[in-house]
Image 1 (cartoon, rainbow, N blue to C red):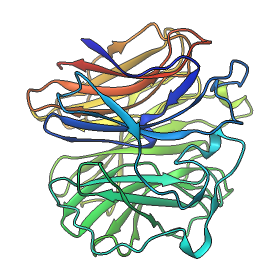
Image 2: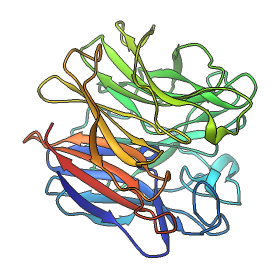
Image 3: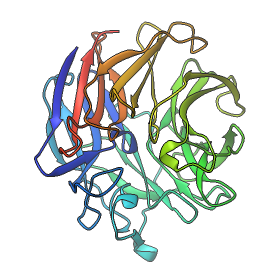
Image 4: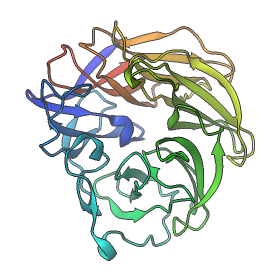
Length: 359
């Protein structure tokens, strides 16, 4: 396995690629993340809430061997940050009638297409929006507002499946009936992004939460979605059980059935999955584990997610629980590129890293 540093600066806090997305075109890869400032006594995430976070993206043109980092070239719909509002003191404020653009027949099948989703918060009252690019993330059109789908809040991270030029599925997190995060659902557009409708809720409303879906298409009709889950109880949230569940649809997202639990424990606070359909037909699930020994992990399935192999450790020796949020793509030569945030000591900077590995 090869470890590659994408972004690392003393005194800075870089995090959460899963909130933004990863996109690839053969050996060209772009990944999104955010950068703020380190603060030693800030709690679970050691970041300074009184200083801004800046949306960043890193680009590799050699399959993840080397990277160039720049600010994400997109317009915010107001004051705030791109998908990091829960980590700063000031909350997002939309710019009224000028906040959002109107989609104009988006071509989802464009060969250089990418989509990125964002949100103003996590619970009731959260608004979400998306951007599109047809030049491999060199520029972003938008922001385009997402509807509320009859929920009280939408907390969008980037996860989508393209069906054709004017049809796309989005996998999103919504607030529960009590206003807390969250439950997951599938949204659908058939008119190039001009309108979106609720296609289906994935699983029942949980007692704890089910958030941050990660999808993979196996066929024209079969879709799998891995989900970050947390239990409910009277304990402190950091002490509750966390795991990853898997759901399946055989009708292109209209209905869903529970499959299994690929990961029984993701550690303190939990961690989102990312699901990748490999070139040889296997599935690759990657995630962070937030208890000692803190690490980045993977599991493989050779039977469409019905069973899963043993845990593969991609990166160990993490300094504490504040790691993970991976995103994964595969190069044409079969090498897997898994990107995540990491630390090597509890009071050290958080940085963005990639593991290049062969399954």
